Image (cartoon, rainbow, N blue to C red; front, side, top):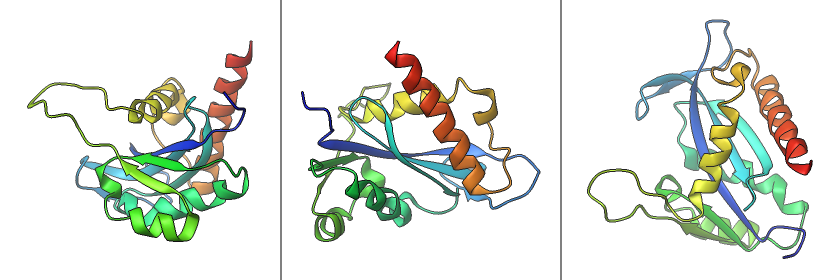
Length: 163
């Protein structure tokens, strides 16, 4: 395998905020008042970009803002894996970034849990964040500070994986 990834996986996580203030809105789908953490990770689960925005905003509104800064880091990107929330952005990602956006569909199971190919990697990264008490709820007033806390936690996880 080469050192740089050729694929990224993108997804969002809704997180409740504390009463300290800052931007927040209501995510009706998850029934949470707070913010969303938007992550782009490689196939190892290491983050390439993170963005925090109000929970009421749809994922597709922020997809290009999350993906665009990662484009200058390597020339190997070819594919972005995402869930059905990003449906309809395939042409826009192809035109603006030159990458193909693959929507990973859920299995045909009627009920129960099933592992979605490639998407489980970003979900695992979100579960790593759950181990940090400070990240279980968004306590920060500013989204920049919130993004920094996520980056610090993921950096610590990456450094622990080296040893």
